[in-house]
Length: 195
Length: 394
Image (cartoon, rainbow over all chains, first blue to last red; front, side, top):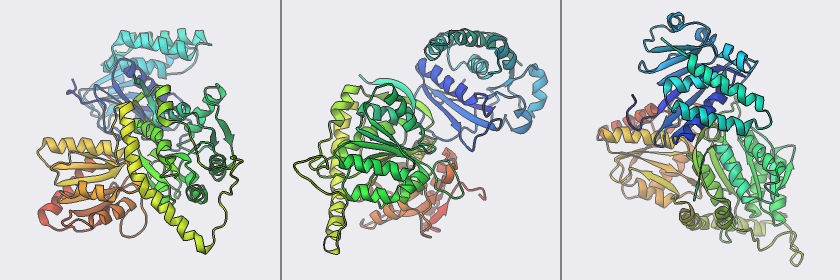
């Protein structure tokens, strides 16, 4: 467990266009709704589709004054499995925390790809869930749900009800998207594997 | 009752603009300020404001639009960054010398070249002599609060100067954080109506704005501008006091953090202040007498007040997020060290240029700077005055 007043720090790795930044901002939204102080910010550069991108969250009970990037995260979320070869995703990651990877593989199959990282390795097939529930590969909603489930930064039931309200507001004219996203969320929270 | 929200710095400024409902916006996009005119365009389209939204072909024209509108007697706003501010350069001087209180949201970004979209203060620091009031924010909250104070300051009869409200590109502008917003009615009351004494559309008093000034008069007008900048100091404090009454949030020229008995201190501007504050807390917990001064108002420069705040220190480091190529240090350092000159006993002072083009400023970096100050105090030797920190060669 984190010490009092120390924020929970989360680092997102994705590829441009997959919605990692959106997921990061949605997590900030969800944590805000549950009464937390939040930071959600992407690391910006010359962005292009498919290039590795990083985004960050700090979530705490008091306003966090620090405005630097996060170098020693508690949790890492990898939205694209191919990044495991390209980016040192476990760099600085707390061994008391966890890494959550979007992959059809099981945690024990992913662990050998993460060097000597000894913390929890979690996997979720966000692509499959997204294709089943939304009909397309939008991995960010299931990844967000898995991140909430594993990190516990937001209470699960509260998260689900807040997200429903938020989707209802956002997609008022596209109700089918609401059902799909809600199914993606709940399925992901059920299926995320911890190893 | 304040409204609890979570917004990015750009959203916060666009929201402040919505609440103010200015007469004209000169709109031209540039990263990372683009979202401000973008969000505002939505407010215009939704009929939430009745602002004349003027889309133009360059920042030269967006500032010209603001100057024209403000000269006509309206209230004009714009937003820009980096090269956009550079392209406005000529017009910045027209606005200030014509004594037109235009409000500009500057989302600080490095100037080219090499081309870079990330944060530093080279854009607004490059415009520091343009005769604009410059107020900098650490957070989205401060960007919002400062924007609401801009017009009451700039439009004040003792001042009549344009105001630049600066925040750090991406770090603040695109970072979503908690914020407390004021209700529309409170903002409307606080900002009030713009009531210029003279303006182009006042038919009973025809006037020219921005004409040629012969040698016999030019200097007098420049001195009036300089006097207005001096007069802005008490007005800024008065408006901050009024703002505290409606918001509960206190502002001044700068914020002194744990400075009471501080022997060493950092002086800096913008979002890095929060990070420095975390370093101060960490070192204080170890029993070290350290502090931080975050400058909010750079123009007018609070010379005497800043000198008094730093007078008790043994050594200070002034942090510049802009390289001014003076071969002698950055702009904040030049001003701060100059301010210390009038003290009978003054701290030793060094300068670090840091954070250029988005180079991250971390708690570790701040601790490294405090360690350098400890060494100066221990040895009594200042050593190299003009330094850089955070570069790869370290």
